[in-house]
Length: 117
Image (tube, rainbow, N blue to C red):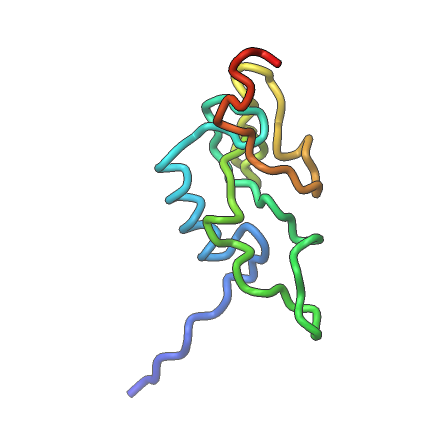
């Protein structure tokens, strides 16, 4: 009789983990409007608060929530690996790479100044 071992980690870190991939799929099924430039057609998910800025515990491990939906936004950019890049069809930018590790929040969806102020 053979015993089953726990599944091994894929060796991936960051955007290769299971929670990120599941939440990216859910996010992109809801909207493909890029959170960085505001145009449609995004195929990747960007971390709003990047890894270098995410809070850590005393041992240096990231606190929970890094790959949650609340910290992800759709973005144009590289898909990683052998997949083709996903530039914005309107402005031609790879928004996620242009942003880098800076914190950038979603563009406002409400017109706060209707008179053009």
